[in-house]
Image (cartoon, rainbow, N blue to C red; front, side, top):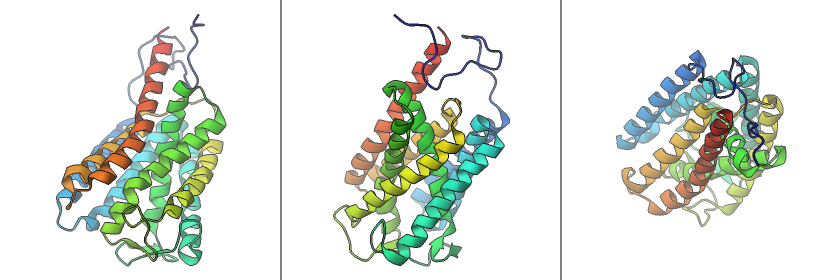
Length: 277
């Protein structure tokens, strides 16, 4: 028998009444929505451009600022900024070590296409770790409402959700000539060690984000929307837009990211139903 209490991660609205109308979107959420629309537009234009790499920096910047705006709406400006900064720092540190030692991703290097670079690592690469790190964490937080998991489940799910994005990212960036693998691997030239490295770094990113944002706030629907938008855009891009299309990457990446997105929206739906009981 149901106790009538909201599920994990659920909260009542500002008036404290269950079933009360939801508050109007906050300024950070509205800003995040505008930035999300701008990012999607930029991705569409990039997909149709004969030189798509020149819009990569703009897309990543919009992604990062969009994620920050949605995070501010959920966690407040201090915790949101701190979570983004530690995720960016962790991602940058992993990349800095990676291009020098081959650990933990494998033997790779960046070309001169992405600028500016700091210590051989493009700045937007570090920003991407932060922006999608926030989105993957929120997606995992929402999904745990369905899976009824705790902190460990949330962190592992978030790391897997972030790693799933790289099933799109690495094939796309490699074909654009943004970085190269010195020893190509079996997945569109990407070695399997890369995904092991991604999972390890993603675990660190999730631990850091979770330590800062933990405190009972529900998952940001804006951040889950960002993760979902990336899933859909990359899937459609590889399936029909990019030249040449790559159905394998579309299926593998879309299937993996899609599982996390579906679980997250199921969790959000359950939380909303709990509010109404």
